[in-house]
Structures are given as C-alpha cells and as structure tokens.
Length: 269
Length: 168
Image 1: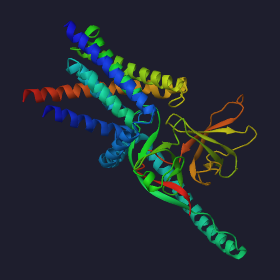
Image 2: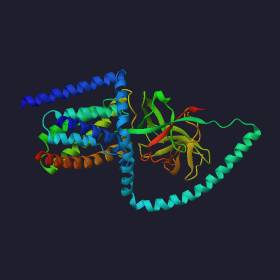
Image 3: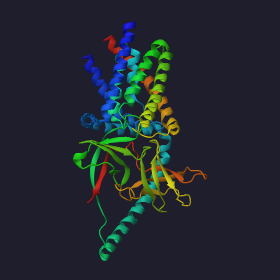
Image 4: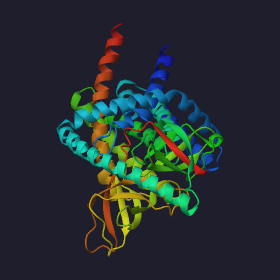
C-alpha cells in the first residue's frame, strides 16, 4: 500500500518535472517545429468537425433561443427591407463616383489582395478567443494582418503564423484592440474585446455624441487594417458621468459561432 | 486493443474540444470535455493512470491553445492528483452524492488553478494580462458551473456504457 502511494508521488514528481522542462524548451523556441507538425495534423482531421460544429451550434441556438426567434425574425425582415433601399442607393452613388473619378482623372480606389482560409479549430479553453486557419507563411500570411468575413466584416487579426497554419485573435478577445470610427458622426475610439462575450467601444471623448444603433467601422489608423471594415453596431452606453472617456457596448456584426471560412487581407494590389 | 481504443477515444475527445465544444456557448463559456474524461478516469481507475491521462490531455490543450505552454498541463495534473486524494480520503465516491461533490470540487479547483497559473506566467511576462474580477464573474464562475454539470453527466453516462461493455 505504502509502495503504491510512493509510486504515485514519484509519477507526480516526474510529470511535473517534465512540464517544467517543456516550459523551458518552449521559451527557447525548441518546441516550435513540434507545434507546427501537430497543427498540420490537426488541419487534416478537424475541418469536418468544424462544419458539424456549426450545425450543432445552430440547433443548440434554436433550442436555447426559441422564445426570441419570432421577434428577431420580424426585426430582421424589417431591417432587410430597409437595407434593400440602402443597397440600391449605394449602387447609384458608386456609379456616380466612378463617373466623377473618370471626369476628374483621379487615382482609382485602392483594392486589397486577399487569401481565403478555412477555420480548422478554436481555442480549447475559455481564456482567450482564438481560432486556427489553414493558411500559413507559405500562403503569404504575416502577423498583424486583418482577417475579415465575407462582405467586409472585420473578425480579427493574425497573431501567430507557422508554415501551414495561423492563429487569429478574435475581436471579442480581451487582448484585442482596434482603432474604430462611427460611420455617421465620425467619432473615433478604440474597439476592445469583452472576455469573448462582446465588444466595447472605449476612449470616446466625453464631448462627442454617437447615435443609437450607429455602425462602427475600422478607422484605418492600424497600419495593417484597411479603413471601412464593418465591426458592429452601437447597442448601449455603459460608462457613467464620472468616467473620463465614454464607453459603449457594441453588438458584433458577425456571429462568431457561424463562420467557417474567412479572408486574410494580404495588402494592396 | 484496449490501449488503441483509449488512444483513439482520447484523440476524438481532443478534436471535439477543439471544434465542437467551443460552439456550445452558454453564458459566454463552453464546457471542457477533457476535464470530464479525466474525472471519469479518477473515479473508475486506480493507480497512477488518471495522472498520466491528465498530463497528456493538459499537454494537448497547451499545444493548441493561445496560452503559454504549461498552464493546462499543470492545472490538469494537480486537479487529477487532488481528485484522487479527495476521492479516496474525503468523499465517498461509490455514492452519487460523493461523486457529485468530487466532480464539483475538481471543477472548481480546475478553474482556480487555470487562473492562478495564468497570473503566475503573466508575472514573468508571458501570456495575457487578465483583469481578475471581470474574469471571475464572466469566465471562472460560469465555467465552473457548466463544467460541473457536464462532467457529472459525462461520468454517469460513461459509467453506464463501461458497465455494459464489462458485461460483454
């Protein structure tokens, strides 16, 4: 009996020592190739599960939010009708803009090069909102490049790159911060993640006013994030009068539970 | 054959933790199925195997997570060791209330240890800066409750399945 107890202590001690050694090797960068190999193996195995996860999440969401779905549905129909009008006006404005650019012989607007990538996994713990994509150094991915969802919605930034896999820090992570701008009132601030739950627009000057439900876009002050990417919509003001800067709760434009593939902004064409 | 079955099951649970579990978000957090598997091993198996399984699961999570390597390995090893000693010395794990108490205590220890090691690594300049009180309310407490419920269901389900296999 005593021998078995001693054996357990020895094994505990050995395993703790192995972990400490691995931490030391990792700090020297020796585990990088091993991590890279494991991530490549992961990329092969997890893609079908990510797609299945979306379907599970969808079913789970329906079950959990049945009560709100009817209200949300009618709200979305109304928003959709309003957006059809906006899109139609935008098309006219774009046409007019192109005509005026040609007439004034202005430089055409800058277009960005993009790489499409599939999501192959997520952070396995609750501390940190990351996801993995199946593009790496060999595909032109670099650290700090912006990651967007179709249509120009900003979802995050690349933070780590290996040969074939990259890690993307989601906007909702507490470590994430992006310079932003309100679309109509042109008030600048900083978008920060709120522990994976949502987004906060911080550092808004106290004298500025932002409209309720106003769209928030990227301001372009971050060198690698193009201007005009949609981030979310103002939901509510959460700062008090005694605070130096105003803070707003932002409803993200993207539902992170539903995205399966993204685009990485590589630079200008 | 049995070892191969355990290895494949472990890999399957790891893939689930990386792909499907992050989609099952309740109150902003998702459960940890690897923790539930470790607690099942603690309850069903004697000897040093639960600690070895905990080490392997923690290392796998460390390799794929954004946190500095070592946080989940250390947390899982200590949770397994605590659970073994609490289970044998304090709780009566052959009763339902004993199992429930052990699972809750282990899940609480896991949440506390992950936060402790994250702060510890941050002290040395590694890993994310954490605001303790917002993290406690938005992450740790909901995670502890969700893990306890899921781990208990998982352990009871696996015990039934294990029992059925043992008959054959």
